[in-house]
Length: 610
Image (cartoon, rainbow, N blue to C red):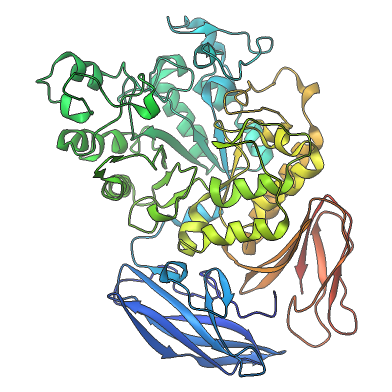
């Protein structure tokens, strides 16, 4: 694959990462010396335009071509027509999914986006997800009486019920001051962004059934505890993100109580009621009534003005750095109602007006591609384009999960080329910057844990390696770094075993720590481009490239034949590879300049090429 023409949206190929509407920007293509001409096709106001690229430079058998694109529309599509002559393959399209010898639709083109970009800090973030009820208890938690809905549980003795009527009501009593007291653990791990699942009052342990958005749940320590946590997080130079439900509230929310009690109330229009008084809810769960985004009153309360739901928590003394939006894929969608893009734009503006460097990330477990690059959500939780293919490649033979994040019949077993095709399929339908701002994850509070899926520490290391080296923002679910297990979302919400250190997988923690440190120390892993090099059933090989150099990454799920890699870099005599992670020998080219990658596995290896 390394001999194929290549382009991506990273700074090496698109130096202007935040183009303005009407600007003409340069873009670059890398090809072999056999390519004779490169033309660029862009789309302006719905009509294709063609231009000719010029040869910018040539060295070591590699040609770099320069073309120009006018950013005519807020999202401007472009691709390249590469001609290697009759003996070299003729004309081929280079688009976001790769190189093909046939015509393709515009939706797989590269994209220049003129909307305001995500905040710069996102590229350098490593996110740590915390489910507050299960992370840590401060001494103050013992002084709070459990609520009437709760089933009190012992932190270290009561098992979590994976799925059952008691599951939402098991109450372990974690709080925000407990999180503050455990930030040294996060510091040792190397993360720099804390993401909290909901912290508003509710009648469940998960708190996605919010009873209000105007205060922090007193069970978590209240508003003052959030301010203390924010001070501690920001004092370390980190970021703090909240979680908000824009698709529904809880049935105990004051808005809904007023709406269901009085058909003439202003809140009535904020939900969906039929003529008989019944109401729409999330997937039929009646405790989660669905919000009607056709309501002007809902919009006023949720995102308009300084005291709106979103804005007030972004200001001091809390200063959240942004929001993860729950069930963003369903927000504003119901039958003929299609407000999703409009709502996403409004919520994004509310965030950036309150703080220009604020982030808004959408939860989307399925095909997120149609909801990004529209001046709304700045990224997504990349279940479809990362978690699903990684699970299917690294799953252990014995794993027996009832479904695959909603898909019946469990996790399929797929080989490397299929995994690569899946990642490319989803990545090709969004801009590079949206992909880079989206969260890579191996599991969350809504899924099985990665250790359960892959079965052992060796394959988990491969998974974490991909998490920390592919484009996107890594997100770690609290406890994965200790080797915790869980068969589904509820079962995975395990209390952190602070008082049982003998249960920790110290080796897994050390590998997480080393891979997070590698990502944070190597600019190419945060800002570089992605060039796939090789894929077979058990192996994936790729390069992360930047202006100053490149890293070569090998991921194997099992032992296989060594890979002889041609074209890892240009230059007479080939290139040396110095091992940065994994312990494999340094790489030395053979007389032809090819590199031979070791065949043992499971393994994850990273080399700096020089």
